[in-house]
Image 1 (cartoon, one colour):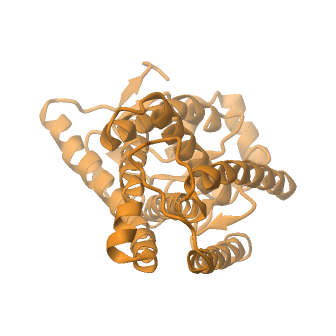
Image 2: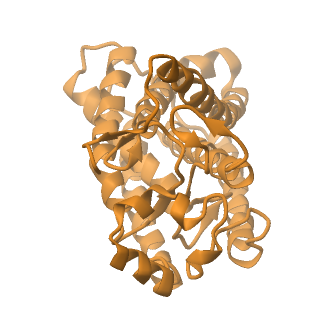
Length: 326
């Protein structure tokens, strides 16, 4: 039996050849989906309306002027982007190098998880976080592209779209692979630290700490990645509360997603005893898939529609920027 040092509450089952074969099948399906998504993104960009990284003037819903980055730029920076495109936006070599680097980092963390949790538990964390992130992000991105500019929200004004990633070598639907792997790195590291520092806490408390740690990392990483110098991803206007140019629901979502994922993952050994490994694995992957879609739709409904209209009723009719003027 693998030795778990993260939490005394997690009873890690021993791996069997059957469990390994089952996870290999899941890995194969994941790889095939990445290959197909990468082909669509690079060679059939019209399918998901992928914005050009070179012809910025061709952007629609949102246009360049309808993005939050436009307001953060000087006029000289705007003209440079219009003339030259996204910084390193067409450098496929740089994107592939970044993919290889994060694959290496993910492999190191996976080996760590396998050592302490066993192959099956480590694989569930890796695949579950990858699929959950890829679907949740992709739902947001695709909804923004196809429905941006079609309706108004209060008090943020016209909803011009959500966001999209500009760079990436390999893709999972419309989320670059490095974002899915990065979520695994963030989530596992934060859950591990929370479990070691607060060993005597229950799973709910540990998940809360892990979610807060991940949100803290995201608070400084996102403003850097979305800066005019990087433009790794771009946000459309329409939200009513921006923190360093990033919609606040993005940070809240990070906490809630990792909190929920961590709690459910810790319950996997008990669920495996109740359902059996195959049924537990299938249900876990399905829950991650459905959860990614439900999370995106729930955040949109609660944040934009309910909270936005509530602020309007309270007399807030302009977008709130923290810090002011950012």
